[in-house]
Image (tube, rainbow, N blue to C red):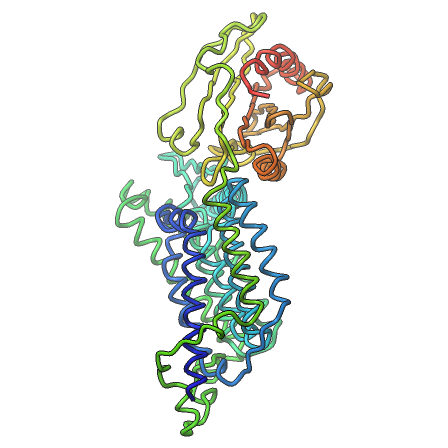
Length: 531
């Protein structure tokens, strides 16, 4: 019994040690998670996820006692990718990659020290940590926008069925007597993730065939869209009689709670139907904490549940070898992150406030971004101009520069920022323009057509990164990571040019105008951006 006490006390010391190292590694990321991400109403459910995980782990305590732990080197197959994702997130400036690395490192450490048999028991609870984390910004924004449009369209159709006149333009619903804007709170995203998390939990706890669990999870998206369409249409109907109060304040929040509870009831009803209309007591919920799963209360079994005697053997601390390797890898990562500067701030060659108002035959007028937008973009410098040709045709030019891209302070792609207020991307492709740029004889840009009703705009955008030009967010993150390692630089910029497709002109005319402007402004831009 004494040897067992020694082992338990040493194991807990190792757990605390790894916990302290992980706390130091992920302090900035989890501070952002708690103080920023979980403060957003779309992800306020994140506060509850750690409690659910603790319950899932506690529920398996007796099952773990019955299994024999056997350290395994296979845990490195998960730990090493986790460390790679940590550096990818740290240097490329992406929080979700850091969050995902945390889950992989925890799983890798458990596999190394406990072996596969015990890890299988804990695996669902460990994977469930992903539910704490908001998805990447580009996925969040695209999903939000699409759900807004679908929810708005369904809401309008319900209003038509109710005999009301309603017209949708993007996420704006025109009721004739007023306009409703379907913002993020009504888009479905606020309920999609809580519903999805609950459906996954129900599927895990609910003992039945796999196909029934899959049906339950897949039903979340149509359920979310349906309840939000009802909320939007209900707001429109009540607005007619009670005015703006139903779209804001107490009534708006009450509608949100009502929609959430309705969705929860529907999910429970689905489980009831899939179970063959059996009572909840016969659903056969899975878990390790039930009486049937508990070991017999023998004298020997009870001894394993007693608190360990305080004891410590120095030799036991340095075994098994998997512990030493994992400890060395994490300590090396911590030391590198604390004492090695992987990026430096590179200012623009010239301040963008001096950007010329006159470019060839184009005359510009300077614009300004609102302070709330600047706070969300976290850029180092920018300029925004409307350049007008002699015939009155306008090109909007915008450049945002970042001296150093870090977590929470990185370039925002127009693919996630531009769609909104009814505008949507109709076509998007990468084209090479006959424009010289640094080492490029042809300039690669993303060309997209944006449409709002009958109105169209043509947009070019690209990302100058040191001596490269990239056109998508994935390449942007990768080169930030690579250049931070090899060149200690993550500075970069977004260049975006937009022109309307004016009535009576072809798309080719707008394209020729943007191409001409790009040729004129490219040599000016290279004077402002460091190489």
